[in-house]
Image 1 (cartoon, rainbow, N blue to C red):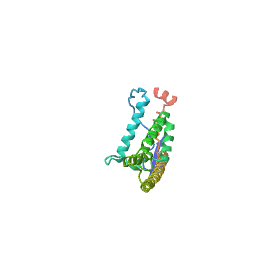
Image 2: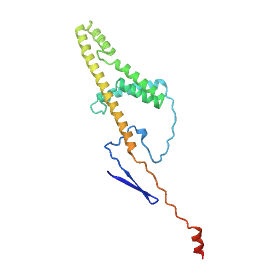
Image 3: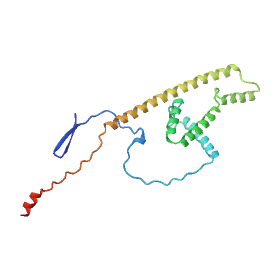
Image 4: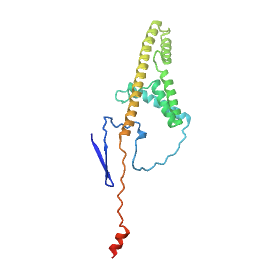
Length: 213
């Protein structure tokens, strides 16, 4: 076992070092100590009109959907979040800022509204698609075809929901473990203690008088 010897005032003390296999993680980033200085930027508050914010959320939703199906994008199905991930994000935003919480709720509601209008048989957009096809054919689609499509997409949708819930649970468990490892790392870290310089001994009064003589 490695040891560190500290000497002070003609006294030494040995402290054993404990090594662990815990890797240093920057999770959560807000708990990382920072040393140094930086120039603070000037911050101005801009009040964006509600309609502009709504249009931005719609544009963001379509860009996310486009990136989800784009082969060159770094966004995949594994980045989706279900009820577990949504509750976790809501809890984190509540502790940070209520405005961020409201912005996330707006984005989530806009996403749900747009996703519900997609031409998928189990959603409202699928029913609209069936109605348009029936209008063009001058007669509704056969119930057997409609039922088969809805059953197929229902199974796919439930499979996606289960996959997302499991993915969120595994991600949450991994993040909790990383936070625990980081706390253990902080406990094992040695806090630097700066030793003061030893005091210079002053001559006794008798020694000073003998030196003068």
